[in-house]
Length: 451
Image (cartoon, rainbow, N blue to C red; front, side, top):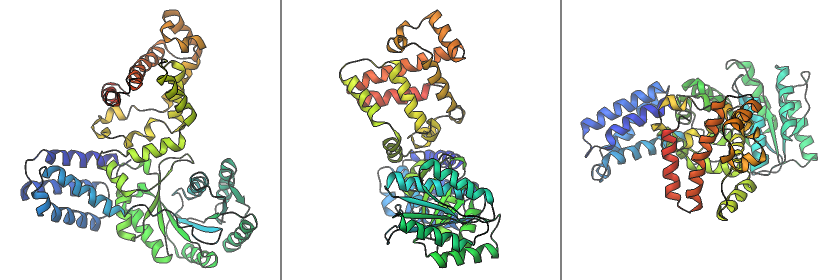
């Protein structure tokens, strides 16, 4: 996410970090490069201008000039300004109303609106413990209704039937009445999108909004459209009282122009960010955490939250107890860790949340392939129970049998055993309670391993 912007800003700020003092000259040069980085990231020009002016004013102030490390003080200024541009701490959804709380989703066609309805329903169901119903008022795209029904059935959301012969207002009202009878907490209404903003779409969605009076009206926008996303959101905001933005496809956005422009232009908060195609790939948008990611500082809070939500706690507790009793970490345990990582979306979903990953060369990051997890698990599955418990048994002929059993090469088996050995060494340090050694070992392995 936002890799190009991260690389440019991290490189620029690294140069000034070691400066003994800040002068108008080196501040000017640094801010010129920051300005170019933001413009290349497709951030809207008014946003860039205000950003640079604010940072410059702070950098020339007494507080930064008098600090022991003015280079680091400037980085803090840039970080604070990034947070300010993207908005204050996440406001979350306002569901304080007589149930069902109605959430209206608007946006252009192709932004991922229908998928986002399902993702939001799942998020409300799993993290807020809400009973959620969904309905499609998109009478122009027959596949939209079927798509939402399939997603709702997969996730256990209540789906309200609709068809192309009905009016959007009638569809929404019928769903809300049915939701009241079923004592649902939330109803999410999907609406029709167009390829561009037009009068017909705006008048239809205005009529729908007036009829159902939603407590939340969220605009769903593709972050890869850059500052155009902000301009489209402004057009919708002029027609509808938007309460927030959902940025989709952020995992494929190397620039970040939408995230940095949209709040400034619309005045509306970004409430959620979509980080992948899976229905669990929706995160609350925290400006401070995103700013840390952009500056290559990682986002450990989000990573910890993700692990807490998706990791199997029983597996983790079982391993911790095993290690505390002095038992060794074997290939069964290693397989369990790989499966946990697979359940959490793989390494690619976590990589930009790890601190210092901006220093890992791009060619190494590009080698991260989450399909490799499935291949590694297949290799371990091809071993006998005894081999998984006693890895030292795996020699010559056993390796050949394991490779043949999972349809892979001998070198794939050797690679897994090597990775297991590295992990086993780290687990021994953990067993001794030496967390510092564990972290140092992990950093060293990240640097030396070819992912």
